[in-house]
Length: 355
Image: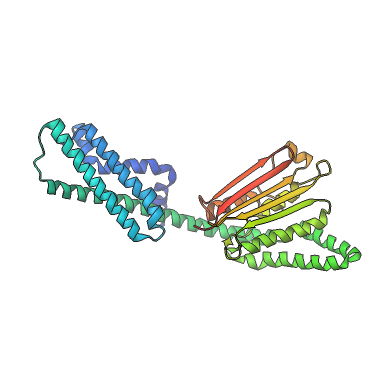
């Protein structure tokens, strides 16, 4: 059973999509194709008429598969979907009827020996069969791919959780934070106690709150802010800016640790450029649930000469892992751009959090 399902998954892969569509249309137009090639008795239809009917049928099928299903059926608007599907079937039957009778009258000079009602019924049965077959195959492919994605997500989650449990407390970051707190206890005791609370919040968030698949956006943003507050202790001369605007993030959820690898990378690679060190972070949440995130940081002299490493990094889940998680959790709902100027590195990420 598993072998058969694996073969089905292989057959329905994206790389085979074009061939699947070609096979579908060959199946639908098999009689006409056999008639044209002379293998069976001729259907009496010209190549031009068959091609015109094919274009009409293709428009009906793909309009339903790639517009009506996504716009209405998937979103639970069943009656709207059925209504528009009925309209497209009616239009297909009408135009098909007009094409056939126009061909018989103008090209053959006589009408076929079949009543109008019989022809309409025949066209209705053919159109509903064609469209029903296409919708059934399309929904089967979607279901198989969704099951495949769920399985990958579960595997990815286990792998990510194991990696996160191993790396969640970055020893280097923890050592620096404790060292800075020790210095503060001697110079600024009050500030040291606040720093201990910040570090405690960071560790609690990593250990407990992020055990769920999704966290509140406000908590994820607060985690980034707390991380930056601790970073200011180590880089007292650094210019670190944080800005948020848009609707309140209180009820919006997001996958945890989407932003922190970019922040950690900015901290790691940001360095002195003519006595200037800066990290600028900007969040904006739109009304439709689209979140925009931008981070810009100064570059060290070495980083300016080479591209920012974008794979695994010490002390975090890594940029490559984040990209993979974005592909799995927010497929076709995110856009990630990373670029470098003469003095800074910029990352821009937008995610549509609401479907």
